[in-house]
Length: 214
Image 1 (spheres, rainbow, N blue to C red):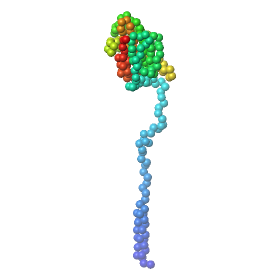
Image 2: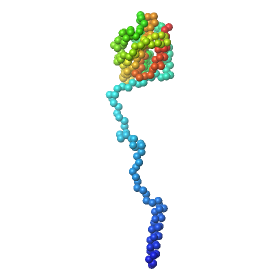
Image 3: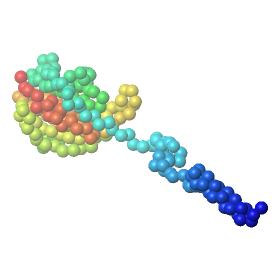
Image 4: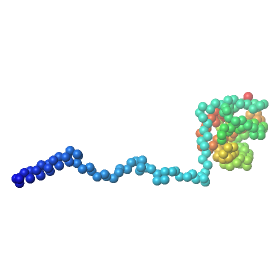
């Protein structure tokens, strides 16, 4: 055997091995660390929200009257006036007053004899102390004269604690507007109540502007 044939054979074998390795794509790369995903990064360790605080204060519902609410004329038996009230609200009697309610919203209508027209001074001296002693959770607001379609009226604003809900037993803080209309010895009081923070400016304007003496 010639020595150069052995060397040539080894060279050929090495070349063949390199060709096979190249054809197979070479050795696979070692796996790197797994990339984190946004979902995994943002997941809560416990996967649950904090438990509610039983001592947290009651949050009032908005109480907004829907834009599509219909208002219908109402005249109590034997009365000399008419006022529009929200259609579909529950009607009840409270002494000499009639009350229309929907959840914590209400319109209270009462007619009483009064020899002289009320004004800001008389309301502060008479009505406000009466309300303070009789209304649960009373917090005074303002006493002003306002103009409505039927003429001037005394407006007393205040806050009060509502009667407990018949189902939940819970109460809310209400914003109250009390309008006093007067003509020829007769006073009509419209008291409009809604949860504090409700945006009922337009509905309450509809009610108070609809008031008419007959």
